[in-house]
Amino acid sequence: MSESIALSLEDMLADPDAALGRARKAGAVVDTDLGMAGYPSDAMSPMQKRMIDAMETIPGVTSVALVDWPPLTAAAQGARVFTDETADLRPGNAVATADRFKISPDYFRTADTALLSGRNFTWHDDKDAPRVAVINQEFARKIFGSANNAIGRYYKLGDGSRIQVVGIVEDGKYEKLTEDPQPAMFLPILQSPTSETWLVVRSNADLQHLNAAINSKLHDLDAGLPAFMQTWNHAMDFALFPSRVAAVSLGLLGTMGAMLSVTGIFGMAAYSVSKRLKELGIRMALGAQRKEVLQAALGRAFRLLAFGSTAGLLLGILASRVLALIVYQATPRDPFVLAGVVLAMLLLGLLATWIPAQRALSVDPMVLLREE
Image 1 (cartoon, one colour):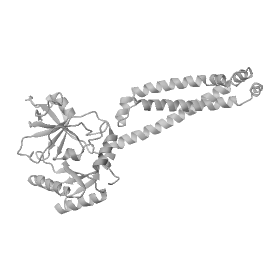
Image 2 (cartoon, rainbow, N blue to C red; image 1 turned 45 degrees about the horizontal axis):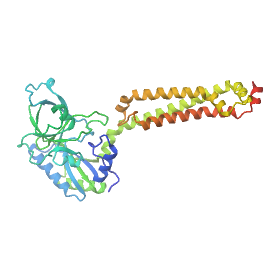
Image 3 (cartoon, rainbow, N blue to C red; image 1 turned 60 degrees about the vertical axis):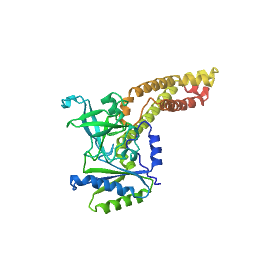
Image 4 (spheres, one colour; image 1 turned 90 degrees about the horizontal axis):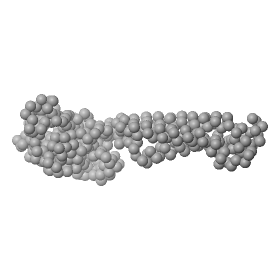
């Protein structure tokens, strides 16, 4: 299996590690952008079906499907949704705006998206069949109240189309990774033909050989068919770019902030100890223990560290929603993250105060007193 393993773009939910594991077991996913604007409308669907059949003959290919736009690769097409009882289809009467995707049968298996209830599409769901759709859980909650009673129900689109729900799939990420759950509908591509499609191929074969085989099959079908291929792992780079930039920037700012804090604490501690050399010398000359001298030297600095850590902890929790909008799946409420940050800052701060204190303790008390 190739090392370049792609993730299902709709599978990056609450557990990305589990998604990565499932993708590794399933194999590589390659999507191919196909421009079919030169085909007449009655020839597009048969040609797309021939492409799927051709891809399935490639050794190592486990499933093939079509989608007009893969999630997270571009702005999803939205559609206003109305309840079946709504007669006035003005925009103001819409109950929701849902992301809309046109797919072929077997898309959910190829995209590793779980079908929770109902059925998948078949090649019989064409323009002569009743209009049907598969919706996600959020769509079912917003339009029908819950996913339990959505199967078999109807809803309407802005053009008056009356569509029956035949299946429900898990929620996914459709426009950006940091979005809240969004309603989404999946329509049969045979009932809504489109000239701009992505051919999604899942395979456990080597990616280099897979790309060559896909190119060869497409060339055999139509030598003039324009195509652009990439793995879904590569497509994820675009979706992850803002989060990665934000994470690197926040990391650099955090490092700079920590360095400034340690420098400031060290300077404050060194100045404080230097101003109290006589007092410390008298304490040691009178027989004070090293522990008592350290407490006297570090007491103020430690109080400042405790106050700063508490304030930073509270501000971090208050900024959790802002941070979650910038970095995917980031939250300062994670107890391990909170404990790690506070402990790291306390250790750095104590180290910065320990050095000046140890320097003062290493000097002979009589020398300190004579210098004063």
